[in-house]
Image 1: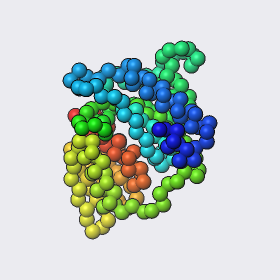
Image 2: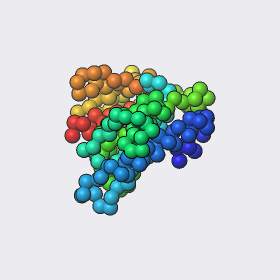
Image 3: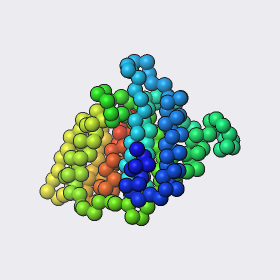
Image 4: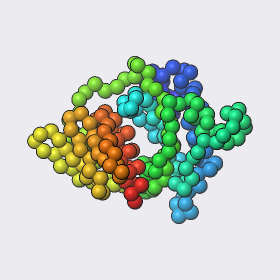
Length: 212
C-alpha cells in the first residue's frame, strides 16, 4: 500500500524501498510489542495512515496506530546491524523525522484511544499538490468532520470577515484565509497552513487525548 502511494507521488524507487522497510519495522513493532487492553474484543489490529504535509517541510507522513498507549517506543543503543531491537534506529536512519504521540483510531466501528508512531520522508519536487485555494469556512467544516470521525464533537462559528473558529472541548482553533492556529496547553502558539488539514487534525487530537 505504501509503495503504491509513493509511486503515485513520484517518489524514486530507492526512496520507496526505504519507506517500505521503515513501515515494515513500525508494523513489526506494533504486532509484536503493542498489546491492546483486554477490554477490546476482538483484538484491534494496527492501522496505517498516510498524508502529505507542507509544514515544517514538504513531507509524506507515514503513521502506524495501535491501542497500547502505555508503551511509547524509544530508540535502542547499539549497532543497526544487530539482529534485534534496532527497528526504530532503522526508521530514524531512513526518514527525515519520526516520533510518537497519543492519538485515537480512525477505522472500525468503535473509536478507541492509543498511540501513533510515525516517520516522514521528503516529498519529491514533482508531487501532485493541490493548487486550489481553500476558503476558511470550508476548512473549518472539514476539520470538524475529521474530528467527528475520530469521536470528538465540536462547534463552528464563521463571521463576515472570513475568519472561522472551531471549538473542540476546551481547545479553540482559529481559521483564517491562510492557516489554522491555536495554543497548546503550555501556551505555545501553533500555526499550520490550510493545505495541512490532516496534519492539523492529528495535532489537535493529540492535544485532546493528552488532556483527557
